[in-house]
Length: 171
Image 1 (cartoon, rainbow, N blue to C red):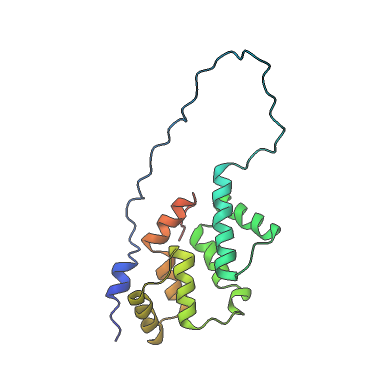
Image 2 (image 1 turned 90 degrees about the horizontal axis):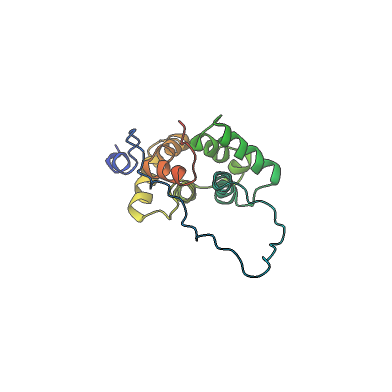
């Protein structure tokens, strides 16, 4: 039997309080003064996307690049961003759709590469030697890829990563 204590401790998925966030503060502005010369005109620019849209787009782009090894197509990116913005699915559900897509499955990753990819996609880091070894043993004992996926997707670290991108982890 494989000792799962490492995974349980490492990937504690218990619903704890959300990570503390810094209170938003207003940016400091310079006092207004009357210009002594003609005011400079600024060139016309396209408005920047709202910050939340940028972060959600970055989250989806991360999944495309990490899981599928490619940049997102415009229609796919927009579709997944809309799914997350609307709240129809959370970060874990969207990630599931990438990891269990035909495109991903066709890459035919071995268990070790699969686990390494989950570390990058869900934890934003390389696998540590002890964690990688432990997960490989768990998979060799018969744990399915979906069960391993759930361990990563419901981890405290992934919850924090989703929070950084301004999205709900979901279930």
